[in-house]
Image 1 (cartoon, rainbow, N blue to C red):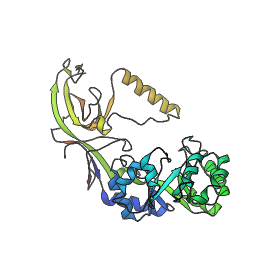
Image 2: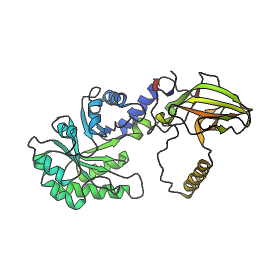
Image 3: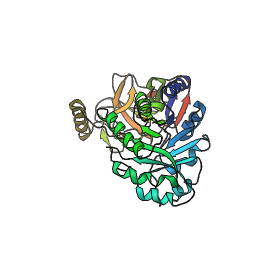
Length: 349
């Protein structure tokens, strides 16, 4: 296979999935977007294999993709929007749970008469979606006219105040109307403890920790497409850049369409992280960027920004160049990367 490939140790991956399943109360796998690099269909099929009764997708349009390999219930995490025709249609599907984050939308669903299955989202300090605590009483008054499936609480990642916030919002929600708590970004033991404290069922939604939690069980490689010797002062690339010295221009599969060169912003919450971001930005401003490709044991510099489906990387003289067709390691963040293939088998580096 020519391109960017995830080599996944299937037995080890499935052992990891089983461990998370055993540790997590009423696990709800999150199966959304590009499927964490593995694809929605594969993750839906794995969810069926491990025996969960419910998965969560990001958008209404993803329900149809996962409903073939997975026949259980599907939560749509994106809040209900009445103008979305597909979202309105899915409220009549007995296997779909619709998330509602606004009182007016809840009123509209309550007035439909067919009692759609509804999760009511509570706004957290993320300030993304959800009802404010003072609105929960008004929401509770509408719940007899829908099939109320519980309260959705999507917490921020920061840990210092997350547990306190989870408890405060869960108590407010259950105080307005007892119901199942659907929680994201809360450790399994905290989810369990909160359910026991409030005497209600709990569901733990898990995405990254489930699908990508065992990094040593996989490797990502890219195929070498061409290798060209160059001399100091010669030019190469779309922009005709002067190569930094004698060596080789190595053309490697993997470009912006795969997620190469793309980076999800980080919080840079420590001084060290900020210094690293500043140094990286300065190098970028100077036209230098370290690639995620490892050639002859080290990550090497991009010759220029990655192309759509390939990248040009400079390998200096003194290193050992790869051969065309070799596979070299590439470090990608799979939450934003799209490989060409996933191969089940022993990992390769």
